[in-house]
Image 1: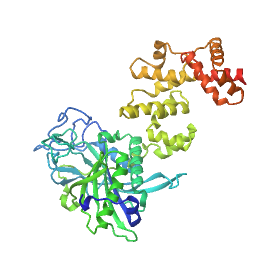
Image 2: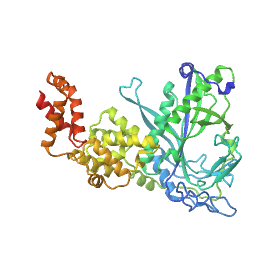
Image 3: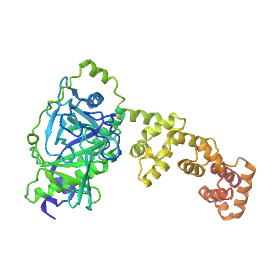
Image 4: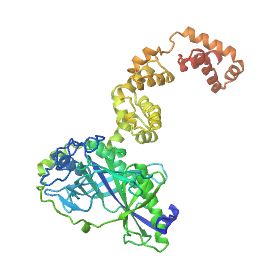
Length: 505
């Protein structure tokens, strides 16, 4: 291992250096058409089926700005507490793009549409007994277009090194992007990776609330370029930075920054210099590797885009869009937590599962907040994780869960039966009620049959019954299990417990 790839213990690195971060988040907008042409933007289409002369950069093709993308850009800027430029324009960013046929990117340089903002990020306190706010300052949010996507075939890593050949899909070329760039994030200390993760999570929640992107990081709708540099403690001059490109999960953002801090410290400790470069994050091994030397702005030869007119939103239009902003996600979470009566730990589980909107709709459909949380953060989340799917792509809807919890609350089903019904719903057998009817699932309503089962189980387990008579009520669990077995699962466990205790205490 070269000195440029060595690492030191993270705590040792933090003891000697102050980390500084710069986070550049690229957001694909969910407009129906691309930034400068009328091509569709749907994910997963047949390669090179959503292209035209404009996004392919063919001679004589002229771009036109997507008005819906401009609207989304302004709303994003306002939600990030930015100033909105009364006049701005596009520029050409020049360098070789293997997956952009025109060999420049239409972006914004010194005249972004939104600038000078901030996002307050909530993180747990160091001792874990509460939360605190860390303010991340936003330098700019500017409009640009995405590039195409390269597929490197024949290698073991999926990267160009070692590949036999490459394929290019231009469907993504020209998709509207908003790039949100922070100012240097300082003062986070050892919690820098955690702050970065929390910032991107908060930004993702905000974008989802705005309805401007599907924010699917696994599909590349939100990607983070993480810049890291270190300053020796007590000094104030920024160090040389590296940029880890296209990190596309919250966990990876935290891990990549933590790794780079440890790697930078090892390089500096050895007396070598940090190389200003891009780096690639490897999820499987948890390391970054060198990409290419990192260019400065002057190297891109920015100049105003001659084929596009400036964008000049009126103050009246900006204020009109300000009125469309939703309730801020952090305020909404606090309101919902209070309305639902969740503890901080329960709400944290909901957030970690990504189930807030699902629970909100389930409650609106008639379920209790407790039942909605139990199903979404428990059984459904477990199944989704096992299948590698998002919880909102699990095949079950809030209406299903509301109906299922209603069957449990009414006494028709117990939890074990409800899980069988859920199996049927996921198998496409119908609604929860239809599945329960078709499978003949219902708790026995005849207390006589239940009482007979209780008496039989007590008689067959005198030693356990004696413990219950002595006041060891936990021993009743074994008797309840016997009753449930005797009733083939079609009994109310709570009612069985009542009958057992009535006979033995």
